[in-house]
Image (cartoon, rainbow, N blue to C red; front, side):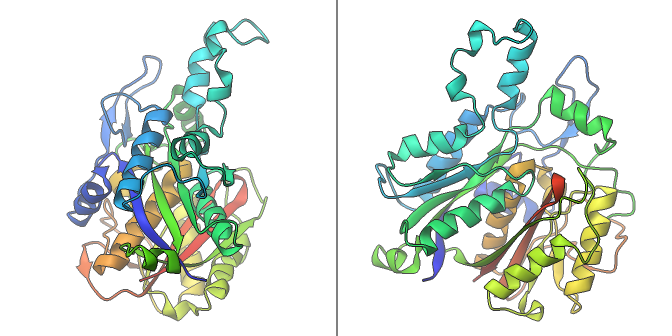
Length: 376
């Protein structure tokens, strides 16, 4: 049973799916320096509007766009849901915390059932009026691909013929910025994946959702198809709270699992949308991983130089852009890269080329590793 993607909803600091795709092909970035909070300095950020977005608003917008793209309307009572987020409603909790007495929630938190981590999944399930499973995966920066895996499995195991899967993130909050600053992980001027002069990550907001269907259902309703999901690799090495394991560790196993489940060899992969956070550790580890498994110099790039790091939503956004690359036969440039540090086939300009198979990588804190393999 083949699982195909028939609809995509996406929003980033560069706009909608089409706007983001077109802007990245042109080498543009939506990252700008902003000072949003009085107690914190200005940082380069991938902000959608002038002020940080609300998770509920982003979820609703992306969901509606995905359904419209797939030419579907609610109710969809037999459609599964797998929508994840690593931060979810954290911004709301941060606003509530200063006004709460010690050990208590303030009266303004009386709607606490609407600000729990599963809120994006609940919004989606309620909107489409489903009675099928509603799942809310949370796996740090690997959340987006984990959510896709859960949606894929709902279909492959016969629970549903259709599922909506993806992730959404509104992570630009004082606590998140302060935490990454304390770790020394934030960039001061911009995001430059795999570059000698990379400074660190740039936080961005947004997300992507997908309508997944059996190929048979898509054919019956003559739906357009972006691509096919072939397989996943999902591992956790529990090596360190933030640093990746060695190149032969769990991240490599995730890549190999995805290849095996897709019935492909490494040489069949035409393009890798890397995690590419622009941090010292991640980019070095990921470059070594690619060199170790893909000796044929596979084309590689990261979208984070254009839209920033959307944490739990990053894998979903990368998957959407990779499906567009497969559909339109274009390699996406690694925006922000000027002086590569690693011996990789890094794409610096958009290039028209035949693409059949591609992979997306996501590696999160706590050793969460997620890899997806897609085909044209």
